[in-house]
Amino acid sequence: MASFDEYLTIGNIFLVIFFLLILNQLVVLYQFRKMPPGPRLTSLPFIGNLLSFDSGDGFMKITASLRKKYGRVFSVKIGSFKVVIAGDTASVKELLVRKSADYAGRPPLHSFMRSTFDGKDIAAGDYSPAWKFHRKIFIAAIRRYLSDKQVVEKTIAEQATKLMQYFEDQSLKDFDPANVLMESIANVSCRILFGKRFDSSHSDYKELLKLNDDFFSDYDINTQRFLLDFFPIAKFFPFRAYRLMYEMIDQVYEILRRQLKIQEKESSNSAEVDSLTGSFLQEKAAAENEVGAEERASFLSDEYMLSNMRDMFVAGYDTTSSTLRWAIAFLVHHPEIQKEIQNQLDEVVGKDRMPNLDDLPNLPLVQAMIMETQRLGNVAENTLPHYTLKDTTLAGFRVPKDTIVFANLAQVHLDPSCWENPHSFNPHRHIDADGQLITNTGNFLPFSAGRRVCAGEALAKVELFLFLTWMLHKFTFLPSEDGTVPDLEGHTGLTHFPALYKIRAKKRSL
Image (cartoon, rainbow, N blue to C red; front, side, top):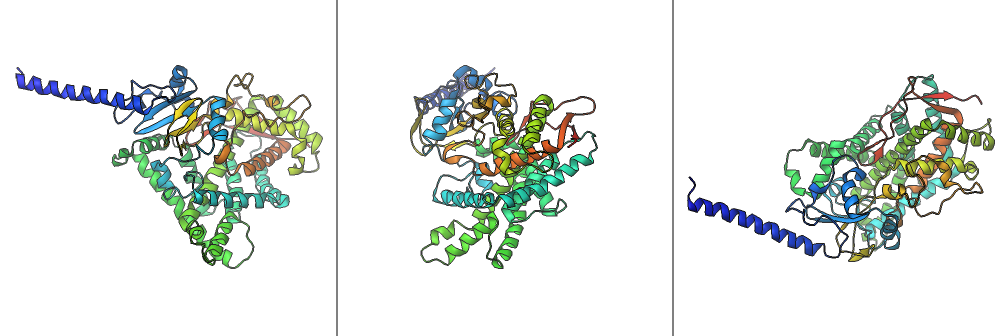
């Protein structure tokens, strides 16, 4: 039998545990005072409210129970971080637009730091003079490229022509369009990033595509990245996903470093700047030769340039190609809408030429279909995490400095108070009674908004318009031979993308 002393020892242990739990609850209650509601009493030491999340992939699924219980704006503790999740339209616009300056930061998450040389990029970098400087160069380079319609149309036409040939070669057989769409968009990104396109057999190009696809779509990597971000101690455990993530990041930078060296050599022999990398190198050379420009020169180190090159390639092509895949999937489900769009194309463009950017104002149904695809496909279900730079408020609740805040864009896009039958695919909801495109509702945020709005928004819109008009002008997309249509459930990695599917492409008689 256990002695009295042993009982006393066990009792003391339980008392200590009980005391620590009570202390933890008091600390949590104090930290979250006047903050949005959330599961306070189930917050545990070290892990916080981790056990309060549902299972599943994607933000909408894992937060379903919390949203149902606490509403569309709630707060949780994950590890040592205070986290607020905003899902109603008013609060999302408040944090992204009205109080954009308060929420413009990025948290020092491990995966951000590890993949961007400690935040030296636009996507994950904290709000700072360096961040503003790089974003300015980034946007200027894209605007310079888009300002020449002929160059833009020629670049995209080259890729679209190859895409059309691929569709034709399938001869009405079942095929999966995922890879060919990714390659097409990736080469447009390469043209802007490097000033040239790559042959599909180019070793660096093939490897970049593979690494990027793995990074965005591997569920295990993205799940364990979450653990690493909110529980840094997890890096000491032998998770395979951590090793793979580090290896992929290092391989991407090895390839980009090689391309940067090539660009440095080419730019030294030419005064013309026709790429994002060339713009960075030109700025770097000017800063190094300017007295008193040391700080500006420090913003143009190789690490800064490599991180932003990665942003341009990695984020730019994945989201756009996923949107194209969603568009095809929805159109196969809705042949009547596909036919209506093709009728408008025939009326505006005719049969003797291909669509171009001058046609855009006269093709509102195409634009509406793209908007509806973005709304219902929700490639970006939620924003990257914002980080409060000062004590502020949201929906009347207190949000202290250094709080991580997510804006759930999918909830805004599926809000029944903003959209009639929100789960139905209906491009006509974006067209008014006069047949004009509705663009100013404030409830449509596929590129986010405010200071952290997607820097590549203008480019993505051009790519989506030209690729989709070319495809629908030439082809009709059909279910697979056995009548199977694409699954519209989707999967979530870093983005929300369609499950792999097979379709057929029937060449139109023009």
